[in-house]
Image 1 (cartoon, rainbow, N blue to C red):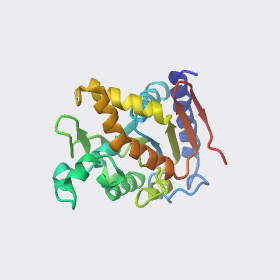
Image 2 (image 1 turned 90 degrees about the horizontal axis):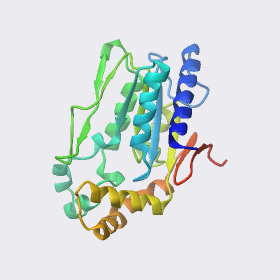
Image 3 (image 1 turned 135 degrees about the vertical axis):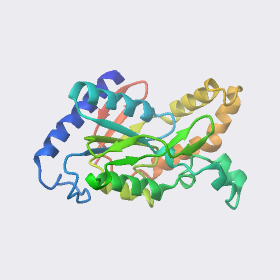
Image 4 (image 1 turned 180 degrees about the horizontal axis):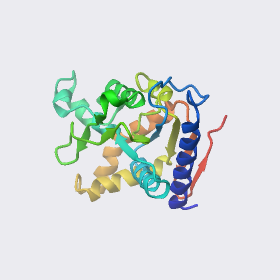
Length: 248
C-alpha cells in the first residue's frame, strides 16, 4: 500500500465517522468528554515519534477531507506549545534544557490540553480560537498560528506526545474522537531525522546529525514508545505502508 492510499482511507474514515457523529445526540459510546455544545465537530489526535511523518500525513489528510469530502478541516501542531528559549534559560540546567529541547518537559503540555478542551467545547460565545505556532527561523513559538473557527467541522491535532499516558498529556485521550499513532522503526526514524537536519542546514556533518539524534530525538522516540496510551489505529510509515488496529 502506498501512503497516498493510506491517507485516502484515513480521510474516508474521518468523513464516515463525522457523518455518524452528526446523527447522534450525545456523542460516541467511547469515553469522550461530554460535549453539550459542539456535537458536530470531529477531533483526531495523531502522535508519532521523530521522523514518523505525522505532520506530512496530517496535512495530506486535511487536504483530502476538504477537497474530497467537502468538510472544513484545520490542523494544529503541538510545536506551537514548545517552551520559548527564554523559559529554558531559567531552568535549573539551561544547557541540558536546550540540548534536550523536544523532550516532553520542554513543552507546555497543560496549555495544549487546555487548548484542545476549548476546541472541544467551542461555542458562538468564542467564535475563533487562535492556536500558537512555531517559527522555524527564530526557533521559538509565536501566538499567530492556525485559527479554529466555531464552524470548523474536523480538527486534527498532531504531535509526538499527544497520546502519551503521562500527565498532563493523558487527558487528551478523553477529549478527542479518534487516536492514531504513526509507527516508524527506530533505525528509519534516526536516518530520516539526521538527513532532515542536514538538508535544512542545521548541521552540515551527517555524523554529527546522527549524534544529535542519539542524544535527543532518539530518547524522545523511546519515551513515546514506552509511554504510549490508548490508540484506535496504527499507521505504518516504514518501507511498507499500511493501517492496522493495535494488538489487544
